[in-house]
Amino acid sequence: MQGLMMDRQLTITSIMEHADNNHPNAEIVSVTCDSPRHRYTYADAFRRTRRLANALIGYGVRPGDRVATFAWNDYRHFELYYGIAGVGAVTHTVNPRLFPDQITYIVNHAEDRLVFVDPLIVPALEKIKDDLPCVEAYIILTDDDNMPDTGLKNAQSYESFIGSQPDRIDWPELDEKTACCLCYTSGTTGNPKGVLYHHRSMVLHTLIGISTDCFDLSVRDVVMPVVPMFHVNAWGLAYGAPVAGTKLVFPGPKMGDGATLQALIEEEQVTYSAGVPTVWLNLLKYLDETGKQVGTLRRVVIGGSACPRSIMEEFEERHGVYVNHAWGMTEMSPLGTFNTLKPEMQKLSREEQFAIREKQGRALYGVEMKIVDDENNELPWDGQSTGLLKVRGPFICSDYYNTGVPSDVHDGDGWFSTGDVGSIDAEGYLQITDRSKDVIKSGGEWISSIDLENTAVGHPDVAEAAVIGVPHPKWSERPLLIIVRKEGSEVTGEAILDWLRDKVAKWWLPDDVVFVDEIPHTATGKIQKTELRKRFSGSE
Ligand code: ADP
Image 1 (spheres, rainbow, N blue to C red):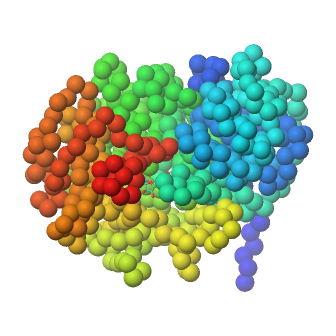
Image 2 (tube, helix red, strand yellow; image 1 turned 90 degrees about the horizontal axis):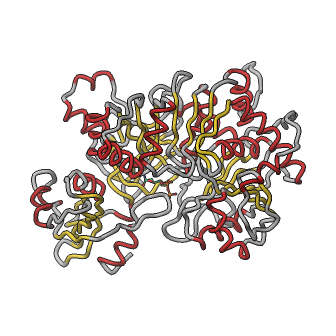
Image 3 (cartoon, rainbow, N blue to C red; image 1 turned 45 degrees about the vertical axis):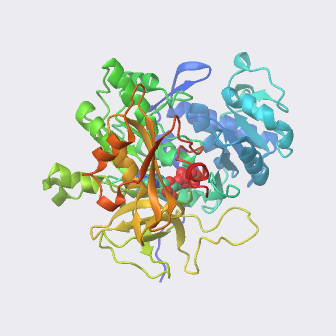
């Protein structure tokens, strides 16, 4: 027997309409190229979104067309998130930090017709514009007064593009499985692959994302996403905030600038933020140097790479900010697990709590997880057994966009192989030990490079650490520790190994330490181990 409930579709348009009706006066504050502090309300944002939608339709954007954005976190990008999806087209967010040949590949692969680009990113696109034949026009995210001189095809300012359009629209009734956004994984090997989200997956991800044991967003919060809107949907915050009615603060191109982040937090009373570990180092360094505070900040979510305990401790002990660790992937919209403590864990000692809090957390509702051995046998959730992590769920991709061949990372039962290796304990807490391609196997036993790296960055003279496996005649592989020293430090390898000695298992202790000026990163801020392996172990 079928239930008798209305068949209303779960769409991004419905998020916009909900916020417009219920939170019209919640504010959105942005730093942009043309304004140090732009300020308006959700009602203003969606009024302009309707003008944008009319402009897109007027231009001839059709349902299913891909429209690219090269933009920082700000109010115009927010309008694009809603306007493009609202007309049934696909918002293709592009990471401007990708290598030019990767950008060329993905714009052509996605066949983007229109490109919306921030003025600061225009020079990068000018270099590759002749290789992007599918792009018909470039809309620069500014007004006529601030238009850069550019040779980009049919360039026009965003303000003139939406200029004279009416702010009324009858949004099309979209099927909830209509594609709404597209994001390419950065593909450390091979070409990037497109993850194509639909309205329904985004709405489900949003509702779960704002729930109490996840972002816990409310109408009383002020959220500043420091995770970029150009990659993995800013972890869903640009959808979650309007559902909850949360004030949004966007740092624009200043995401990596500690001074701007501190000023925004204090002046806009930010209570909540989220980002990858490295962005917080800039803020913490700035606070340390200036003695300034972030008094209103209550919580920070850290994910995208394993969060070192030293960052959690510094936030908490010096600034009274609680850190939640989270894990996810582009293919998962991206939230997978989120770490909050269960009530009985509140009674544990600080050390015992940290042992749990350093893990990546428990699966969110909607995410099924399992770990498997090399023969695909499911392993127990005992906190010890370590294997390849597989996931399944309604906001996890079922295949990649338009590759021409079926995905080789989905199995017959629909499980997606994450490429991450880890264990799950009896309480359901996932601990990622490595990417499968980065695993170090020494004498038949696994050594977690993530654990070693996070322990090493706890050393007061270490700015960044990476661990790779190098071939060894007896043990097959041994860990090599690669260190960037803090400015002015002359700490020796011996001193670091001595310091690590009582913090890691004896056989995990790296055989050698090398010092470098810089560790290479991917466009999403992850350590590029392929490069390190080429340089230090002669393999990839
Ligand atoms: P990319 O586009 O760089 O492929 P994603 O942003 O989708 O990447 O990154 C997903 C990967 O990042 C995960 O598979 C995992 O390896 C890593 N990752 C994300 N969050 C964490 C975390 N909290 N701890 C450890 N690794 C993480």
